[in-house]
Amino acid sequence: MSTMIAPARETVRAADRVSAARRHVSPGETLSQTLTMAWRALKKMRRNPEQFFDVTFQPVLLTAMFAYIFGGAIAGDVASYLPLMIPGILAQTVLTSCMATGTQLREDMEKGVFDRFKSFPIARIAPLAGPMVADLLRYTIAATLTFCMGLLLGYRPGGGAPGVFAAIVLAIFTGWSLAWVFTWVGTIARSAQAVQGISMMILFPLTFLSNAFVPVETLPDWLAAFVKINPVSHLVTAARDLANSALVTGEVAWTVLACLIVITIFAPLSVHSYKRHM
Amino acid sequence: MSITELDRAGGGAVVSGGTGLAVHAEGLVKTFGEHRAVDGIDLDVRPGEIFGVLGPNGAGKTTTLRMLATLLKIDAGRAEIFGVDVVGNPHVIRQLVGVTGQYASVDEHLTARENLWLFGRLLGIASPRARRIATELLEQFGLEEAANKPIAQFSGGMRRRLDLAASLISRPPLIFLDEPTTGLDPRTRGQMWDTIRGLVADGCTVLLTTQYLDEADQLADRVAVIDLGRKVAEGTPDELKTAVGNSTLQLLLAEPGEVPAAAEVVRRVLGSDPVLSPERGRLNVALDQADLAADVLIALRTAGVSITSVSVAKPSLDEVFLALTGHGADGDDENSREENR
Image (tube, rainbow over all chains, first blue to last red; front, top):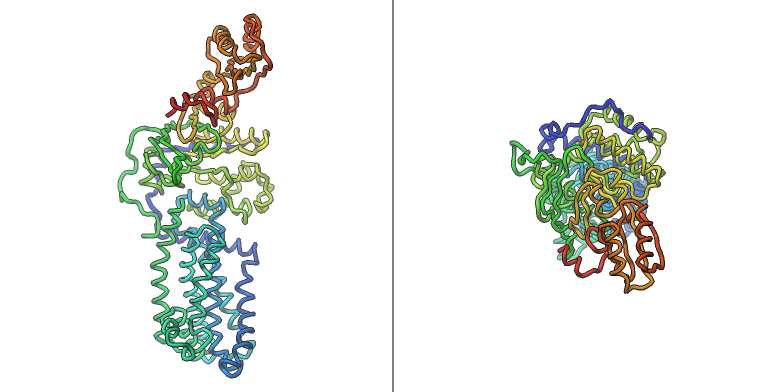
C-alpha cells in the first residue's frame, strides 16, 4: 500500500482514449460479456448451494407425491399415470426454477456491484442474459432429475433415450424463454419479495390450468378452452409425444413459436426497464 | 443489435466542442418527484487536476456524479466529458470514466482476484492479461495477501481499495471518486490520499466528492462547494480558506446587546466581518492564523466587552457554509437565503 502506483507506468492520454473509444458494443462483445456474466452466476451458485434446492428437491418430491396421490384417482394406478404425469412434472419444475431467475436478479440488482456493471462500457443485456445462461444448468438438473425419479417409480418411456432427451431439451428451451418474463418482472418490481409474489401469480395458473396433471376431457368447457391455448399445455403435449412415443408433433412447433414470441416481447422490455432504472 | 447499446448519431466524430476540459457541465438538473436534488449546477474540470466537490449530506454531490457517469438520467442541462456529449454517447463516456462509488461496488460472492478478473474480462481484456492486471493491482493496493479471500471478510478500507483498483483496470483518463475516505480510519485515509495523488501523476483527472474541508484542502486543486443542489462557491482551497479562515474563534458574549460593539472591535483588529450565529450573543470570527485570537481578545477586553466563553476551532463544514452563504448547512437566516436564490 505504501508505493501505490508504479512510477514506470506510461501516462494516460485522454485525447488518445477518446479517439480510440468504440461507439457501440458489437454482437461478438455482447456474447463474450454475457458468457463472463454467466461465469459469475455459476461461481455464485457454487458458493450458495441452497440455490439448487428448488431444482433438486422439488422434482424428487413432487414426482413421488403426485404419483401416489393422483395416480389411483386419475389413471387407475401409479404405473399408468406416470407417462401422463412425468412430462407434466417436467414442465412444472422447469417453470418453477425459471421463476427464481427473476427473484435472484432483483436481489442482485440491489447490490453495489450492479452499479459497476452499469458504469462499464458493456452491453446492457449482458448482466440480464448472463445469469439466464447459467440457469440453463439449473433447468437441466431439474429436468434430468424428474425423469430419473420417474424411472425409479417404474416409468418406462416409450420414446427411448432420444425421445426423452428431446423432451428435456424442449423443456429447457421453454424454461429459458419464459425466464425472460420473470427477468422483466425482476427489473420492474420494487423488491425481491414482490418479484416472488408476482411470479407466483403468473406461474400457478400457467402450470395448473394446463393438461400437466389431468386429462383435459375431465375439465369443464370454459376451463378446457383456456387449457387448450395455454403454452404450457403445448409443451406438456409435445413432451409427452416425444418421451412416450418419440413423435415430433405440431405441438413442438407451437411450443417453439410461443417461446419465440415471449422472447421477442420480454427481452427488449427487460433491457428497457433495466436501463430506465439507472 | 437493437438490444445492445445503440447510439443515435451513427458514425462520425464524437468530439464536438473544443473546450479542452475534462468535464464541462452546464445547468445540470435532477428532480426526484418534487425534490430538485440537483438544481442547475455548472462544473468545469481541467485535465490533470483533482477537482473536489464539497458539501454536506444530501447536497446533491453523488447525484451530480452519477449523472456525469451515465448512471442517472440528466433531467436538464448538458454535460461533456473530454468534449464527448454525455447524453448522446453514453457508451463512449463509460470507456472514459472510472467510477468508484460511496458503497464499494464489488461482488460479495467472489474473491478480490476473481472480481478484478471478471471486470477485466467485461472490459474486453483477454483472460491471461486480465489475470496479470489483477495481480498487479492487488500488489499495488496491498491486497495480495487477501487476494483469494471472499470480500465478505474484507474490512471497510480493503473494500475501498479494491473498489478503486477495479476502477483502474482499463486505466480510464477520468476517475470519479464518491466520498473516497468516508468511514475510513486516519491511517487508511492518508493512504487513500497518496493513491489519489498517484493517479494524477499518471496523467488521470480526478473528480471527487467529500464532506471534509481538510480532504478538499489536502487533495484538490480546485473546489466547488455545493448546497441544496446548487453551487455556492468555487475556487482553490486557498481562496476558500481566505473566505473562511484557517481557524475559527468562537465567542459567546455575556451581554447579547454588546454584539454590534464586539463586531466593530473585530472589524478594527482584523479588517474583516465576523459571522453572527443564529443564537444571540454569539460571534464566529474567521482567523488566518490562530495567533490572531489573542489580538481580538485583548482588543475586546480593552473595549470593555465581557465574554462568557471562548474557543478556537478548525472551521467545520458548517462554518464554511456560514462564511460562504451566511447560513449553516441547514441555516435559517431569511436574508442570506434570499441572496442564495
